[in-house]
Structure formats: C-alpha cells, structure tokens
Image (cartoon, rainbow, N blue to C red):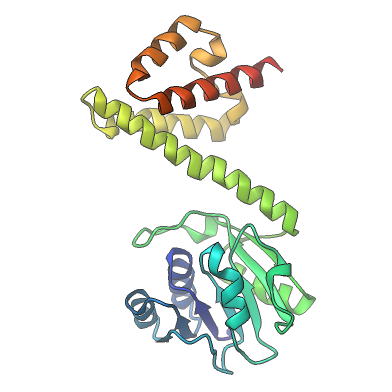
Length: 258
C-alpha cells in the first residue's frame, strides 16, 4: 500500500472524515493545522498527529490535503510552507489548479463527491473521488490514496468537476432544504417529520431504479390546477413558500411539456 505520510490543513467535516479513514487504513498522519484548537487537537489526537495553527509542514510529509472552506482556500494555499517536492491537494469542488500559487509545483484536487457530517459514518467504497493534478506522478499518488481506501476514482477536468459540484448542490443541498420545508408543513398539520420517511425513501429508491426523469408524480405533472390552487391557498401563511411552490410547479410543467 502507498505509505507516504499525510498532513491536513483544516479540521472540519471533510478533513475529519478523510483523516480518520486514512489513519484507519494505516497511513501516518503527521500534522493537523487549523485555526481552532479544540477541533484541530481533537482530530490530531484521534490519529496520533500533532496540532498547530502554523501552516508550516514537516519534511516527512509527502502529501498535504487542504480541506478548508472555499473562501479561505486561496489564503491558506498562499501561506502554506512545505518542502518543494511535497504534493499539495485541495478538496474543493468549485476550484481548479489555477488557485494554487506558483511556489507549489506539485498540486492536485482530491474532491470526494459526498456530504460529510461529524460523528456520522460514510461508506468510502461508495464515494466517487474526482481527481485532477499537475503531473503524472501526482496523479498516481492521488489515485493510490483514493483506491487504498476503496474510493471510486475518476479523473476529470475543472469544468467537469464544477458541473458535478453544481449537480451535487441540486441533489443534496436543495433537496435537503425541500425536506426541511416539508418537515415544517407536516408539523403545521400536527405530525412529526418521520411520517414522511416512507415517502422519502421510496422517492429516492425509485429515482435510482428508474431514473428521476421517469419517476415524477404529483399535481404539476398531471396539470391538476385545482390541487395546485388549493396548495397555494394552504401556504398563505408563508408568501416565500408560495413562491417556491409556484416556481417548482412551473419548472415541472415546462420540463414535461418539452
């Protein structure tokens, strides 16, 4: 197995999940760098590493994974100091190799297409890793790391990764918001969110089995104007939800009329 030592810049959800999984598979984790001592030291302690707020990495580190919020990425990469031969890879879906400063010669993107939460396990063998790098050696290193934890490797260019990141926002972030809205409406009816669980599970299962484009049901696809109008009346307590409902309905009607 590929055994080069790894360090992390960042101790958030992505760094936490990746670091712990790599450590579980036998990697040596040298250093965790983060602004917040509590989360950084906790992660470092879990994988026998050292914590620091200083972005200077030891010569023993062969790969640095930068997993920080997008708005901090450029600043962290510019401040980062390591030996010239170290491979530095970020985990951001919306940025390419051009965000790296000139001083970093070996660079890459190590983007896991998954949502992460602390204290929640994910199955790494099911995760697509979207990789890109500046040179063949870096490509091989990143491939070996992803495959060593059973990830599914895909080499993509920046535009492909950005589009997949956008797709992920629709299927994950926007869907989660719709679930939040559904929960609020169910609570107004006096029922807990859990009453919707069988419907949610079947919706996702059917979309994966038959394709979401073939699985649409409901008043919009049926052009059931009476039901749509009644729903809008029920949402009179929230003009914002009325707007969302109306725009989603129009979008569905247009999609299935083309």
